[in-house]
Image (tube, rainbow, N blue to C red; front, side, top):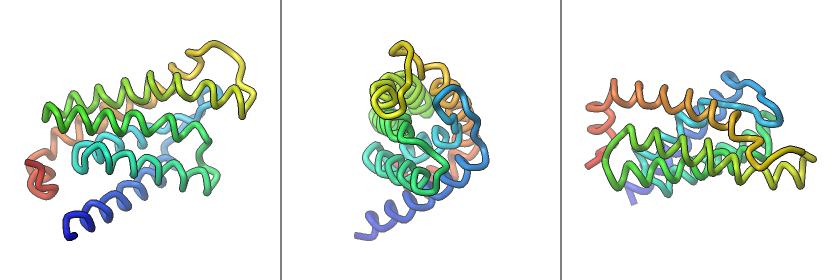
Length: 165
């Protein structure tokens, strides 16, 4: 129970950081709002909490951002795949750089490709299937680099505090 409460509280804190950071540090590219903070938090939650809790964090963050009007429906596909893949790759291989690659592939490619049919149906987006790849990829690249630098610089205390085995 104690471990579950720890993960729940840390998920809430990381979600709050992503909501605030996504509101402060975001920029529009085409139909999408690029928020590198979300990618940064996806990787941190994937590494510290694992893939399942990273997805919970991504869903919570996307929902709150939509409720506040600071995000779009594209926040869901734009975050859940990167959060899960980042956490899964770290859990499997214990490499921070692979968690960053997971975010790049999950958000920058899979999330972008998944967002297109949603945007076409609900937002009237017109263009190719790869319409969102550049904007999602830019956000994922910036966030992944920031996460990699932060996690590498503070790895020992994070590993100890988060009890990552």
